[in-house]
Image 1 (spheres, rainbow over the protein chains, first blue to last red):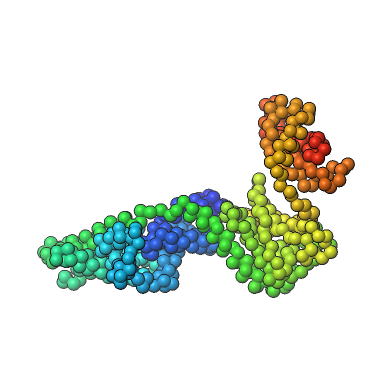
Image 2 (cartoon, each protein chain N blue to C red):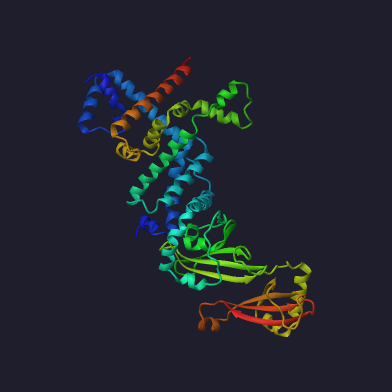
Amino acid sequence: MDLIQQWQSGDSSAFETLFRRYKDMVFRTALLAVSDECQAEDMLQEAFVKVYKSRGKFKGDENGFRQWLYRITINICIDSHRREPASPFSLEEMGEAGFEPAETAPAYAKFEEKDAIWKAMKSLDGKHRLVVILRYFHELPYEEIAEILDIPIGTVKSRLNTAIRTLRGALADEEGKEVT
Amino acid sequence: MECKDIDEMLISYLDGELTNEEKEVVELHLSTCPRCRRELEMLSATQYRLRQSFAARASKAPSPRAWAGLQQRLVAEEQSKVAVFSVARAKLGKIKGRLSSRQPMWKSALAGALVVALIAGLVLIVPSHFGQSQEVLAAEIAQNDPQVHEMLPEGTTVKITKIMKPREGDIFHALFLIPGGSIWGGEDEGEVIMIDALVNVRERKVVGLRAIKSRETPITPLSVAERKKAVEIAKADSRVQEILDGGAEIRRVIPLPFFKPADSSLTVKVVGVILTAPLSNSQAEVAPKPRVQRWIVVVNLDEGKVVELIGATR
């Protein structure tokens, strides 16, 4: 009996093994999507609650499980974007508006400022950001991304094109600033 | 092919997602077009920076408490499921007959002792310390079992006080503690009823129900002086001395709320001094499973003497 079968037959240690095996994958995806550790951990729990509840519904092997878990995670990320649209105040904006950043904030703010590509990444909408995460963080092939997101491969390509070119633009702007 | 067409293929080219034919077309164009080569370099640099940024930000792992947090959340989810269940409970009456005819044993076992009532406004709570998902599952099965629901009083909060792990097999015991006099009309004050749902986790069903009736007895904690006195009294007893000389140790001193010496009034304070000793090798060979011998020295604190010496092996 493989791990998936053990889990589906109600073996609690198999569920724990799956959690420990895939928690980093889920957590990091969520962390890149929302940039907040607490929220990412919350989303990790949400993902595995869904796994726990859907034990009887899942059909497939561990590879299928991994894809299914990606899909669950991505859907949670999309939902979180829907629930909480971009924060009205960024750290930088608050600084400009005359708020004094907290003691520990300047180092983080500096890190944020330096990483122009991350700033641009955050400005992407959810569906583009998730394709970028699946491709350049998880290094998944287009076909798998298409399956996970349930979209045609052509859409994966066009989203990546749009996203990378937006990011490239941000990078070019940054280099322009450095020159001037 | 024009630059515009090639441009659209550059990211797929970098990602290794082009067919061999497409790849050849792109490479042929790049060999003659400096503008597209620059574009390719820029896109490649963007991907590199993106990967770097991801690596820097996603090197973290969830906190070590993530698993415990998930367990708590599962319990919380079960609670909300029960709340939903309570809304749909009005339909219970319709299926009641079917359930009891399928498994009549629970009813006969409890006949006469229980008032069968449909439940309204019942809330079940699972303590947050349930750690393992099998236990959570057992709680879920017990909570959602219509037969269990029928046994619980209406309009009150009933707690699963304990989920007992099985020593062997898949049977868990979900114990619901019900204060006497709630729906069990005519019960004495201080009477406690426990409903013990035997849950087969593998088969995902309640396989038996038991009602346990007992009398509540308050436990008065022992003071340090009382514990000390109890140990002194026990040690002074020749039989206890013999056990201690044999290698046993005094483990703890506990109140004995149910112990009522036949010849004394209720006000007498009786405590138990627990002694344990590992079994000798010869005994262990005969009975390989129990490894500890245990004695309870029943001490009457008021009279300053050992009332009884109870031995047990486990």
